[in-house]
Image (tube, rainbow, N blue to C red; front, top):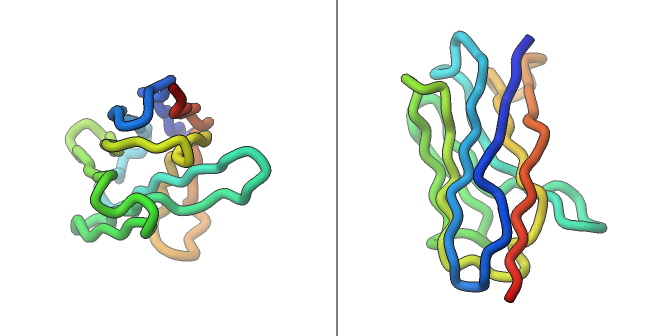
Length: 118
């Protein structure tokens, strides 16, 4: 059974940084599209950042220039470096792995809370 386990969330002051990690138990991890999504209270889940198997990336406009997605296929892990955090970044952050767009091989982590507050 595939598992994605996020870590690295927590409470941080505005302007601070956090790095989220997501470790996946996927034997073919390197071919998966890896993404980070977030869901704030009362809002829909939204895409934060995505990285394809060949390293192409895409970011939500709200995080461009502040967040960086990366992956280490040898460790089956994807990261989200978050800098210059703002209160509006507060949300539960979820890791996603999908084999390809529309594939049934689409997995989610349990989520990790990020709270930006003074």
